[in-house]
Amino acid sequence: MLYTGVTAVLDQQGGRRPGWLAPLLLLSGLMFATLAWASGFQVLDVSTRLEDNIYWLDADLEYDLSTPSLEALDSGVPLTIELQIRILRARTWVWDELVSEFRQRFRLEYHALARQYLITNLNNGELATFPSRVAALRFLGRIRRLPLLKSAQLDPTEKYHGQLRTRLDIEALPAPLRPVAYLSPDWRLTSEWYQWPL
Image (cartoon, rainbow, N blue to C red; front, side):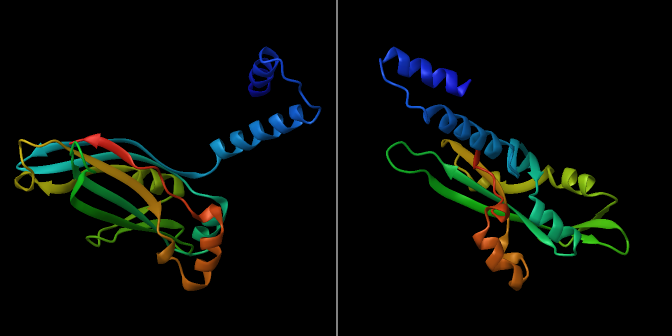
């Protein structure tokens, strides 16, 4: 499809197609398809609601760990997942003002003897156990009633929006693994910033 569309444009413009163009375009299409299927993190949906003068956050995320990170996890290396949340005040002529910034951190680890996955909320110390990695990642991907900030921190006459992204914290990996993680794209697991109105 990609090759057909490009060649049609070249034909319309009267350009000549060199013999190497078709394989090059096919290879480019395969590379983009591979990137689209690559592992990574994604923010699917975020919303907030005001209850008892507190803004609460709900979020749905998707965690697709790379093969090296999965192998490390199953070998006993804990992985730290971090949610980065920002609240900004919209401004017309200059960049938006940062009102509040918040980080929610979770540690995911596998205990081979118990054959269970553990998730520790590093902000409050709460611990949860799961019989499978799928169940643990599903739990991590469903954030409910996370307190963000008090309504008194916001001016009711202004407009605000939130931004959220999730990432694997390479700094939290064991020291011998960090140089490999810094150099390999398989370890740079992070989502794009997701923005929503507050």
